[in-house]
Amino acid sequence: MYQSTLLSTYAERVIHGFTGKPITLGGPSYPAEEVRENRLALCRHAGLDDSRLTVPRQTHTDRFRTNDIPCEEDADAVILTEPGIPALVQVADCVPLILYDSQQHIGAVIHAGWRGTAQAITQKVVQTLIEQHGARPETLHTVIGPSIGGCCYEVSPEVAAEVAKTVPNQPEDVYQIIQPNGKPRIDLKQVNRLQLAGLGIIHIEVLTACTGCQPEHLWSYRRGENGRQVAFLQLK
Ligand SMILES: [Zn+2]
Image 1 (cartoon, rainbow, N blue to C red):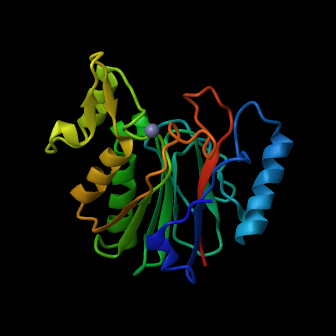
Image 2: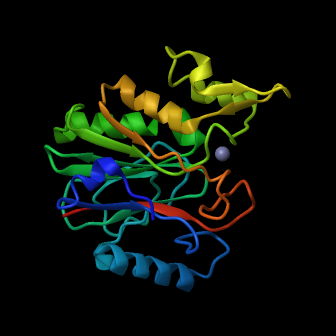
């Protein structure tokens, strides 16, 4: 289990975490019963209310929902404005984010792969938290979780260009590395960090663990694995 230093400060107000191996909390090739049992075990371990567990069906879009129970519908982020509802997003290389506004006591979990990042899902969720729910950039605490790093994420030039559009005023070398083979590697965590910073967010924590570099600790879709880790949040 990976925890945020930033959010651990608010341990009396939120339950949060990022899981890793050996258990899987999703994945198409695992029996549904095994996944369900593992999720129940996580709820018991972390103190989440399993009867209200919200798990959206992720489709690599910029769609998000608010407080849905159960959230079986398509969405790649869940905004929480009510205490007692645990929400999780599943990842295996994609970037998981957990957000918490300490002033309004609201938060969100986000799944941002390259498609979601290119559609700026993180910025859209933050803008909604600010404009519709009263969050403020200076009280919004944001954590970028374990995911594939710039060290390992080789993509096509087209994908790099799509993602780069979301941070137009940043030098390319901040998030993109051109390798000797001419193919770019991109740093999705960095792009999401820049998206957050671009909205005036001050509190941004980036967990450095890379799914590509740490096969013993984290699931990786690119490595051909079917397991999934999750980011979860429940407001107390
Ligand atoms: Zn790596």
